[in-house]
Amino acid sequence: MYRMSCMEVWGGNQNTNSDIRSQGLTAAVFSNSSDGGKGGDVYYFSVCGMDMLTRIAIADVVGHGQEVSDVSQWVYNTIKKQISNTNNSLVLSNINQLAHERGFQAMTTAAVISYFTKTGHLSYAYAGHPPFLWRSQKKQWQRLDVNEQSSSPANLPLGIMANVLYDQDYISVSKGDRFVVYTDGVIESANSEEELFGQERLLQVLTEGQNDSLPMLKERIIKSLLEYTNGSLTHDDVTFMAVEIN
Image (cartoon, rainbow, N blue to C red):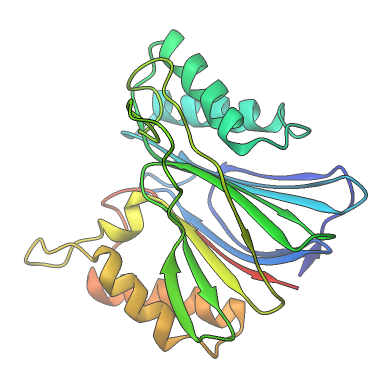
C-alpha cells in the first residue's frame, strides 16, 4: 500500500487498481477506461497541512476519445492547482466557471471531499449524485446529501451553465467509518436486458461487504460489475474509491 507524504498529490485519468493511505484516510481506488489507457474519469488524492488535511475528488467527463481525455486531464490539473483551497464548494464553482467559459460539455458527476484529521470532520460538495457514507457503529449506509441553501439551480453537473452554486456540508466521522465515491459508469453498467446496475444494487453490494477490508470491498464491487455485465466494462469509464477513516 502506498503511503502519501505531506504536500503530495496522487491521481490522474489513467487506468489504476491501487491502495493508498494518508495519516487520516485509507483508500482503495479503481479506474477503468472503456477505450483503454487514459479516459474521461478523474480521480484525485492529496495531503497537505502537516498531513492534517486529506482531499479526495472524482469527476466524469461525458463522452470518449482523445478530446475527452484531454478535458479530463485539464480537470485534474485544475483540481491540483487548488490543493490549498479548503472550500470544496468553491473548488467546484471555480472548475464549473472555467469549464463553461471554455465551452466544455458537462461532466456528469463530480465530488470533492476533505477530511480534517485533528477535528474528525468531513466536508463535502458534489455536482451530480452524492457519495455514500458507512457508519461503523450503526452498521448502515446513508447518502451524503448536502443541505441545499439556495433556491436557484445548485449542485448541477459541471459545465452546463455559469454561476451555479455548490453547497458544502460537514459531518463528524469516527475511526472505521467509510465513504464511497463513484462515477456514472458504475451505476450505469447494464446487463444483457439493458437494465442498469443502479444505486440500490451498489448499496446492496456495499452492505454485503461491510466486514471486508477495503481491498476486498473493491474486488467485490469489481466482481459484481463484471458478473452483471457478462464480463465487460466497455460501456463507459468506470471509477470508484472506497475510503476508510484511520
